Image (cartoon, rainbow, N blue to C red):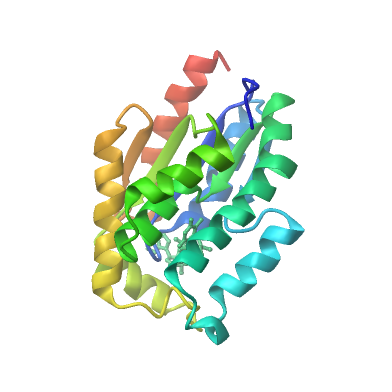
Length: 215
Ligand code: Z5A
């Protein structure tokens, strides 16, 4: 479907519960903007009106009985709209897209967490994305118990946040396996450090991609 080669760069930020994605996305966006990059920040599930409505369904406790396949297909339904309406047009215009979660989250949560075989996810990935893949994925990694303790301070838990620690351990392992499989794309950040230290690590990896870009 999306055969055209895009000109902008596609950066995704991933991690388990409470790793600090929200806290660091703004930092990444500001760092890129200071380097003169035109950045579109967005998120999954979400990023479009349809995607945000799907997100509400996915996170809502009223759907605690949602089947794992329904969950998987809703993630990709939102993603299809997001790619067509936001990601691909931005990349074609030369903008950089900074996305809070993308398909690596599907491999981690629906694959690692829910147990859906990777081949099924890969089938949908090829269908919905064709050759579109992130250029760089920043994985904020930290022990699950620290992330859960940080997240607990935020208040009401959504449908995913109600999961047990073992679920998030599986999610974390699935992320680390993906990072091992595609080391050229993944940048693993030690997110257990202070916010300042985390941002120093992120600044270093951004510097590399900016140098490659000649920015
Ligand atoms: N999901 C899926 O299953 N499959 C998919 O394909 C996709 C998503 C795309 C919603 O995602 C859910 O969708 C998600 C996976 C699923 N469910 N879960 N869990 P989300 O990204 O919106 O949800 P989230 O993971 O809960 O992200 P979040 O709420 O935005 O959390 P965060 O961004 O990682 O953390 P934070 O809010 O920036 O930080 C948490 C707290 O820690 C906060 O109080 C910070 O001030 C504090 N913090 C942050 N960094 C530090 C450091 N370094 N030290 C100390 N304290 C810190």
